[in-house]
Image (cartoon, rainbow, N blue to C red):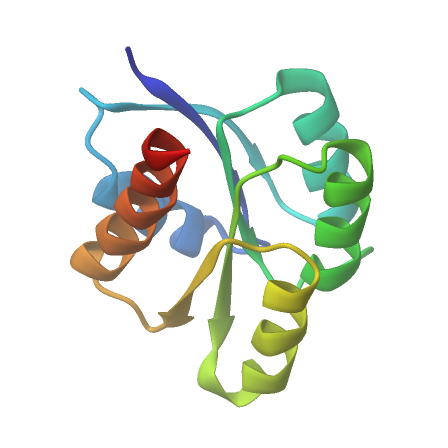
Length: 125
């Protein structure tokens, strides 16, 4: 069964890169949010198996969006995306409940590795 994934990044280019990294035979993109507020709204509406969330976004940053998602669904699976310069925010995101992260610029294999790690942990529980 395909896993449902919600993508949240303020740039179309990055959302397209994430989509192209994910095998459409295994994963279904249920939505694309362009800011943190939309990411939270879409999460509540679509209940994805995974949210891939950028840290630096308009209206609500990824850390605040993560906090809202975890408050709504403590079991949420979230992978954070960010530039290396936001490393301290990535650490904060992990402490607030993110399951993993990928650093921009990323490769398809970086994304797949993080996604597999999150879903493999789910199977072990």
